[in-house]
Amino acid sequence: MFSQSRYEAIKAQLPPQVTLVAVSKTYPAEVLQQAYDAGVRIFGENRVQELLPKYEALPKDIEWHLIGHLQSNKVKYIVPFVHMIHSVDSLRLFNEIQKQAAKAGRTIQVLLQMHIASEETKFGFDEAELLTILESGVMQNAPFVKVCGLMGMASFTEDTEKVKAEFAGLKKTFDTIKAKNYFPGKDFDVLSMGMSGDYLIAVEQGSTMVRIGSALFGARD
Image (tube, rainbow, N blue to C red):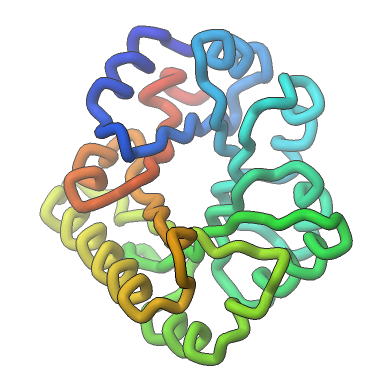
């Protein structure tokens, strides 16, 4: 169940430059409607098959963010309406988004997902791989994809120093890419890191976007 008081309390903890994405995976559309009625306009979903019916059921001024691992063959279903894709973790996926966005006549905002956690299960580029791709210029020559920044997930651990170090490393990579001016102008300005259990550490380390679900909506079934 969505809690207005929890929402207000979390918002009060976030600096004005930090965007809150309400992670609504597994919660039904009526719970999202409660959040919408309380003023939430940015929702994050992990799976395309869950996002599509919610998009159909809910108000059309919602900004939908796809934050989970995205398969290339599912891109075409969300390109007509998605606001931002956080989880671009391969050049193949990037190219498919460019192709489908061109067909739809839309420019899609994306974040490049970095692998910063110790768990092997998390997806993402490593720094050397990403910098090689950026040097090639291929991501800068995709007119229907706008690279807005980076995203990463820290290790799932009680060790706050480890989490802090992983976020600090991601911020360093973000600053390196910004300094090299691969994406000129103010477009490259989003650092999406921090979830319900670690968003305060992420904000302290320079996050500009946090993805919060259970702290807003309560424990998932």
